[in-house]
Image (tube, rainbow, N blue to C red; front, side, top):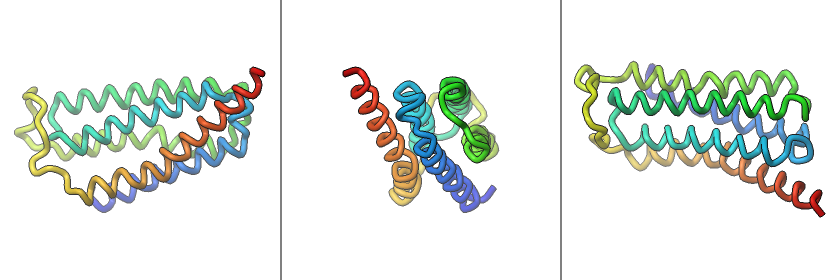
Length: 171
């Protein structure tokens, strides 16, 4: 897959994440499944964020691929717990279900893409090494800025609102 196509797929994945937060807002997540579900969203973002940072900083070798695989599996488990948490508490419409499909498959596709780009000399269990050459500042910006804008900020705003509702309901 070309780098441009991979980047477009990445942006579609982030857009799906942003739209998922719109669905959460429309179904009043802060008042239904609340802080617990919103916390799971933050965990999922932290997992994927760790994987993206790892990809940006180190060469893809077998040990790194194992770590990335573990992150993808953990993301899937937390995604299941997230949906399970929301299931009886708020209405998950078909559009949100389809967005979840994109959010679920994208990390797996990214892992396959990373594995397909491995060179024969990186197929060993060698130590984890920094990328050579390092990722360019433009790549860092192109990967992180859309992620923060489309998913990071909405996730934090969702959590802030859910927490405020939870605190207001305690009094």
